[in-house]
Length: 200
Length: 221
Image (cartoon, rainbow over all chains, first blue to last red; front, side, top):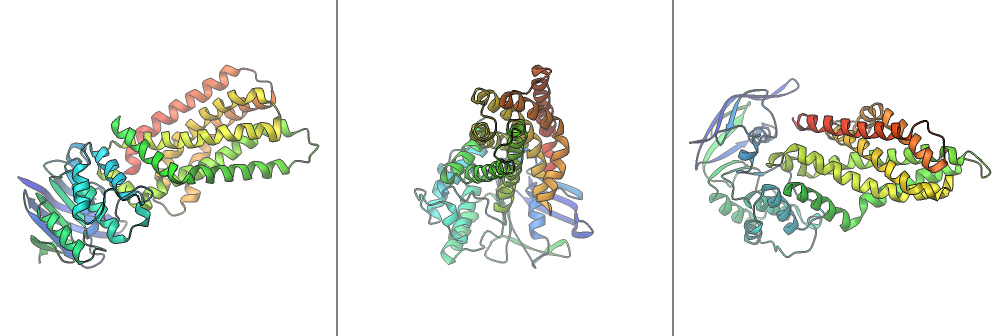
């Protein structure tokens, strides 16, 4: 089955055409790494795939349906450009909240936190974390629901070597992955340029 | 319902850690009331007559601060995207935001109404029903305000957009609220107490229902 199917995707912001008749197919079990210059539209593409942005035109199907379908969203883990973390809550409380929203137990999220070198028992609020630590929490949140598909925007941003290695290992185990990155990810590499994807 | 519970839990945890929301709103609202208090000469007999209007003005401006904050921080911290990307129904997000703001503003009203009675009207018997009226007014205000705060959060000039959108819509509710507050705080005559409550209640239902229907579209990008 095709996990992600995009046909003639156009996305404009005012008069600026960021994505131009973009096509993309990601099969079940496939890992895709998308690279491109700053401002090339990687984040825009991933936000469309996550259901956060509507296409201006074109057809986008994720896990066989629309990206804004709640049942489909429940199976997608998203690592955004900005870590979606509540600063006054601890890492564990963030995991509990987000797994509560997704309706799954927090255990897997706490396991991932530990794998990434963070202590679930840490009582410090996330506001006191470094960017790398916040990124690790964000990844733990995305993986805590054991998603079928992970859409990750620069997941290695702000991470040290150990963190990058740990994250890469975790992402390798994800069933289907679409990641925007400047490097560090396995899988089929595509390059986004002039609003279209080409083989890297 | 569980997801709604988690939304409230999240706001409760973050607020109880610092009381930043309530303390900021309280300081602001008390500053407004104290300033208005000193705008009248000490011997002025107008104090009871202006009590309701001054109280509602303080609550209205405090509500604007609260409503702006409710989405600004989520957008800034990336958590609004996280909520939108989750299986959470947008109407639950709306309900959670409304409930959270009503609780905080309700606590504020419960503190401001007695203060207003002390500063302006000296009618302690009217405090309890006045708090009830303020809560009804706050509910309608927050219902519309949460919708428009979501609209304003993504725009430049959000400080202007929210009041410009909100103020015209809340005029009928403001009139009903102030008239009822004046009745309880100053003993003003009212032709029909029931009419005021019906108007407030109808406004609350209308604003909640309409905002709930529109909220999903407001969040779309």
